[in-house]
Amino acid sequence: MNFSIPTGSLKFAIGWILVFLFRLIPFRPPNFEPMLATVMPFSKRYGYVGSFLFGFLGIVLYDAITSGWGVWTVVTSIAYGLLGIWAHFYFKSREATRGNFVIFGIFGTIAYDAVTMMIGPLFNAQPLAVALLGQIPFTLMHLLGTVVFAALVSPLIYRWIVQSEALEISLSPRRA
Image (cartoon, rainbow, N blue to C red):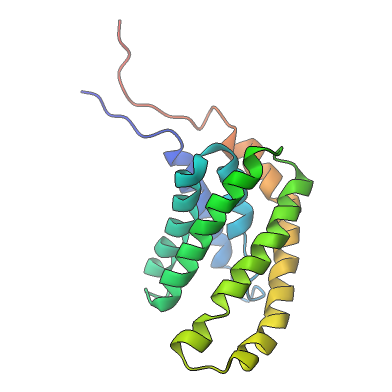
């Protein structure tokens, strides 16, 4: 019998669980979460498909367990998936350093917030000016969280999870 778990599956599960548990912390500041900081290290190793899936499924699974699915799930999961693809191409020619994580995190957060800001105006008839005005403090808090997580967490995730050979598992029998 040959049972095999694709390379990286355990690592993806660990990444999703870390993000999920952090997002469940009560009274944490809004939009202060490590999803992008976790997507970036994975994007360095798992290509554009793996990077898209990490971000996309991270949101889909979280919403399935917590708030349920809605239009926000579609928009945010696709946005994080696309950030994963963008991160893959960014890190393809760059080292996985604290500085590169922070730089990409800043640009990625601004792009993500610009896209997700449109949920209110497009789906809830919110005036664009109101959405934009409300987005400013939200994005500033998001940027603060991104910089903190990208500087402190992304390098650790890359070193201890993504690069870890101990977390590479295969349950297929050895051939003699």
